[in-house]
Structures are given as structure tokens and as C-alpha cells.
Length: 460
Image: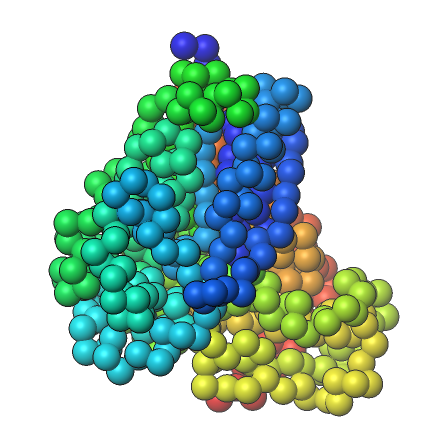
């Protein structure tokens, strides 16, 4: 078989779905097609448009393969999601949106059966952010569902099933605050039995396992070669982490940014994680536990800007620092380290210019990220993946607040796609580093430090 160079990656984030072609030699995207990851309102409840995604995926693969040639396929998606299949391999129920609050109605009953944090490393979260809570709610509100369900698949593996017909689960998605996985034992948690799903979970495979060839109907629809290899697939934050796991020596940490800001600490200090502050144990592509913390930073960014211009002038930055214009958590209190707090400004928000708002918001997001890093015992350099890697104010403040070097990933807008593509690489990955040192903030650093200290003091 010819060497793999161009990898088609299905990359489903909470906000957008995309299909990309990643050039493994250059570690960059050659082509990208996207669509919104819109939530359908129901009935029976808010759910994701899996049929619409599949039509988009097939059309995108056909177009991108014609334009660039695709040698292999991989998948990465957001977490907190699973697909329930019936005996014919069709949907037994729609895939519930994890931001739907329905599972909160049965929270008391769910809390009786969910395992302790010590078993799963999974904090108790609202809505459907614990996948176990989703499944519990679905099974209780649809009494015939348990009988209809033949197989439970984690979300990336639904798409590899659609491509290959192979049923599988994978640990990075199982270990993503689902309550369904025991990281210390590398086994399903006791909750799986309590939900009656012990015989319905698809076999667990590794993220980089090759599942076989694509189905004939997929070949006919996309024009892909019938013998093209397909990787099992990976949770998106772990896709961002994966290149660094194979390139770096610990300690280091990766900050994956997007709708969620997720901090992943590798080889750091030992800490007692506090589940009430949205810390958790993720599981990386090799099956190892990873102390983690998170908040909805990208969502908070959008909530505060609300149509304001993105960007600011030097004068506006100077104004924010001089007047100590500060935003305090939590803009979205449903997750993160400050869930019991309601956000507020140190000044009247309505009087801020767009640039002043952008600068103060960038500093806020960096300072909350620094808090997440501290909670996970992170040490060593910090690598920022995703959209925030383009925000110099965020990077400067993060470096000042943590006292550690911060690097912007070279694949700053494509970290998840590149990480997923590397799952099918033929080796030789160590020669191509993913991130490098960035420019420093110069004389502004001392003012940023003073700002950070004042912000942290006022949180006490």
C-alpha cells in the first residue's frame, strides 16, 4: 500500500461540523468544507442532525477527494455524546443535545446510581454533560428504548461505523466526563450495569486502530478507494493533545480552545482534583489518565462580544490596563471553576468601546485558563491550540498569570484535525514539531502582571 499523505478528517465540533484534508508532510489543511452543527428542536427533544451531517460528510469527501486525493480517513468529535443503534443498525433514538436541560429533571434519581468521582474521575455536571445522565433520562422517559437499543457507540465511532460498518467504542470519548468509564482500571464503570447496558456497549478499541475498508455504498457515493484505511477516531480535545504526546517530554500542558477551553496537564504535580470546580480525569489516546479542567471559553467570548468588533488598538489596551477594566466570572456559570458566581464588570459595560471590551475579555479568558491550569497541577510549557492561539492578548496574559512559557500551536486553527490525521500516520512524526516560541509582550508584561494580581485578589 502507498504511503499515507493526505488524510480526510471528519471533525464535528459543538458549533460547526467540517471535513478537512490534512497533508501529513506539511501538517496543514489543504481544503476544508464546513456546515453549522445546528440543533434540531424536536420532537422528541433537542437533537443533532445526524442525517444532515452524513449527507454533508459524503458530499464533502467526494469534493475534497476529487480536488486533493485522500489516502486515509479519521474522525474527531465533541464529547458528552453517544449514538444508540437498533438491531438493524439504524438510530434507536435521536442523539440528544448535551445542552438540553431535560436530564436535570431526573437529577436526584440519577445521583443515586452514578458512581463516585473516585471511580470515574468524572465530576457531576448539569444538563446532559454527563453522558450517563443523558442515557438515564432517555431510558426513563422512553420506556421501550432499552429493548430497542442493540448497541451504544461513542460519537466519533458512530461516523466510523457509518464509513466501515464496524461497531466500536474508544477510551478518549468514554473518559470524557461520561460517568461510564473507570480510568484506573481501564474498564467500564459500575454505571453501565446499573443502566442495563452491559451487553449493549460496542467493543472498546484504540483511537488509532484501523477498522477496515469503507463500505461499498460509501465508495459509490464519494469516489474514495475501496481499500482506504479508516482510524477508529478520537475525542476532539484529545486530538489536540495527541501530537504533543508523541513529540514532547513531560511536563507540559495543552490548552485546547473552541466552544470549550479544555486544559490537559501531562506529567505535572500531584493535586487533589475538585469535581465541584469542573476538574476531571480525561483519558488520552494511549489510555492514560490526564488531569483536566475546563470552561466554556469560546461560548463566553461570543456571549460578551454579542456582535461587537473583534480586535483592539494599542490605545484601547492601554486604557484597559490603566483603568483596570476587568471582567469577573462566570459568564456562563454552567461549567468551569466559578460555577457559583455571576459575572460582573468593574465598570459600566455599556460605556466600553468594542476594543476595550475585546481586550478585557481576552484577559479574563486567560486568567480563567490560568486558574484551570493551577487546579490540575500543570507544569512546564503551555501550548495553546485552536482559535485563542491567534489572540496575542490572551497568550501574553496567560504567560504572565502562570509564570510559564506559552506557545501558540503552529496548527492553531486546525489542532483537532491534525491530531486526528496523525492517528493514521505511518510514523516519522518526531521530525515535525507542532508549536514554537512566540513573541513576548515586551514592556507591557509588568503591567499585565499587576493587572493579573489585582484580578486574582478581587476573586478572594
